[in-house]
Image 1 (tube, rainbow, N blue to C red):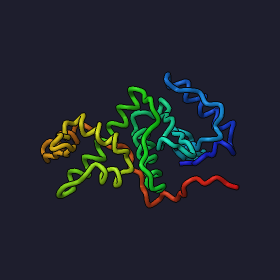
Image 2: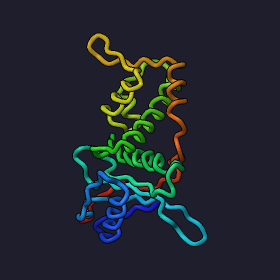
Image 3: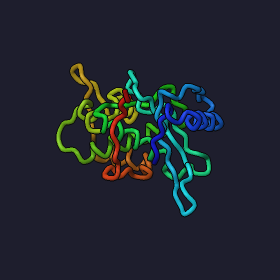
Image 4: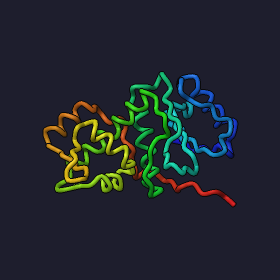
Length: 203
């Protein structure tokens, strides 16, 4: 994985945006890439490193966006790389000490990928957790925005409204059924190998 600063590598950043536009109908083309960081995922062999996909993120987002655009190149799809990129974006948010959410609007495939990621992460925690847990606590643990947690749990019918507040109802058998339906989580991010510091504007 390589981090590329759009301000320092403008042509490379613009070319990534052009490349994404070929495959993403909803993609808005950005010529001003100075405000973005690009995280480029590669497969490496004895001939070098070959890009399989990337995501971009704003250096400073007032809306708490931790991902602006995501692309896995067609020959490398269905290998878990997209799920890996989503998971990686949240690991960066944890390092920043912030909650994150992808920039809207999401494509149909993007929403499906994110809903799958949110589902697996949240159900894994609920399955292991003993006792009560709040949406805020889930957000603090995962760096997933509270609104995304709420809509995900509502879609799984795991939320009930009692006495003026949302209550998570996590029956173990129901959790197992949803986890099975959510499928595999893709490639795992090895956080112990992540050596990264949040972006700071150089004076």
